[in-house]
Image (cartoon, rainbow, N blue to C red; front, top):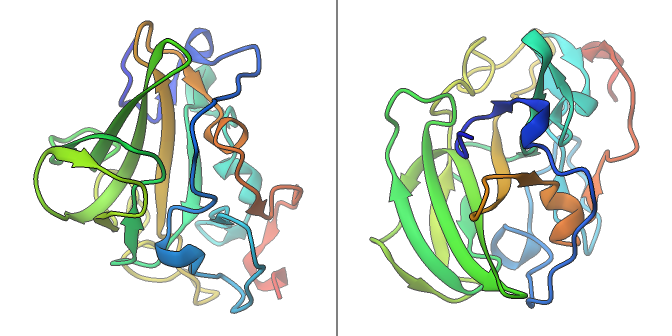
Length: 209
């Protein structure tokens, strides 16, 4: 199992829910001040699902376990973030930087931690830069910045904009059980509330207010 892959085989997706005992920040952004796609903010939520794909508003494609081409599934969750947005460690753990090596996930951070007798890894993907080197971190420490590395800019709408003048820039969050490489829904396991989590629209993006 390739724990860094964005699109994974269905066998790599957890089929049962999981909860963690660790204290976890409610947002991966500094002080919870997340970037917004509609210029509004809701107090207490982690951020917003990436909404645009090409010229369509389709946040459900950002969900964990969303269908992907070739029978694959989305192994993480895509949270909208403008390029250069600071990201923080949401849990105490050990941090590693993995530079873009041609993989679809691009520059990524590994935040590894223990919980309930198991070892877990939270991956932050598509980053533009890292902050500091490999080290132990405490939740709230700034560890990197969002970007368009990997396949995030496959259609030019991460570094640029689509015809509705919206960017699809985002961070790919992936939660992996280290022992077997199985991917869990990071939104559920980290107990995050995310805007547009109930939005099942698939419409031309000019229909998004």
